[in-house]
Image 1 (tube, rainbow, N blue to C red):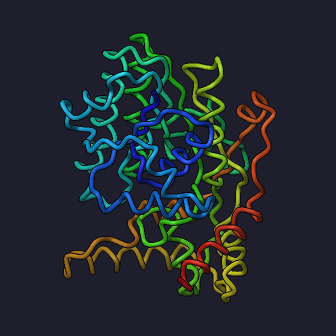
Image 2: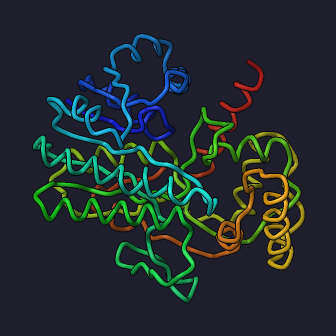
Length: 339
């Protein structure tokens, strides 16, 4: 039997759908009942039998930091897809990020060892990959992480989670790690994740930046996970990115797909630096969550180009073009907007 953590998230829900398509026996972890409706919504994008498929999943209510609950979830499990994570770039969330991303992952890999799980797939991020001083050089799996660099708290805790996975491989666990770029997929329009970008762009964005990063369709993330888990490959990590796009290009393509005006003005670095400082001041005075931190501001200005050659070569894999991804997700967003 297969166990999926984070089954109610963007990657987890799409993974569950693909696993059910292959008639796999699946158990999934959830924390609150209200999140289960998101899974049904995702299923409904791809099938008319969403309810039937959803009911094939054995759902276990558990927290990845509650060992007794997790022990029940691990009974008779042979393979684990660890998708659960907390995404935040707010410095005030650092302790929670460590608890979920690092300690939670340590719990998962320890139980994988205890229950003799055959293989684990961990969903990490390109945020844990190093970068070059020369932005034109492609970043690959061998590009070293620099702990002295001004890394985001999210990147730090995801890197810490990876270390837990690598530690477990030294203790006998077979594991693979995927490092996806910004994951694009439908159904989580009002979350803190990347799907919310479609909602924000539809509302109207006046500014763009010339920063560049990697993007990937959630369907390709899931396919890469399945390919790696069903292969003899073990104890390696893989960058999975479809294309490196500038934020200007992504915003423009998405705005066109949503039939709204694309941003027309470039947000220069001096403007971005003023905005994140004002946002910090506003959050301190009004006690509101940050919308733009210093490190997210730095990220959207940075040029980072990722190399997907390792994964593409191993499986002769063709990623979905971003134009196709953006158009498809745009249609789903507009359909949900009307319903």
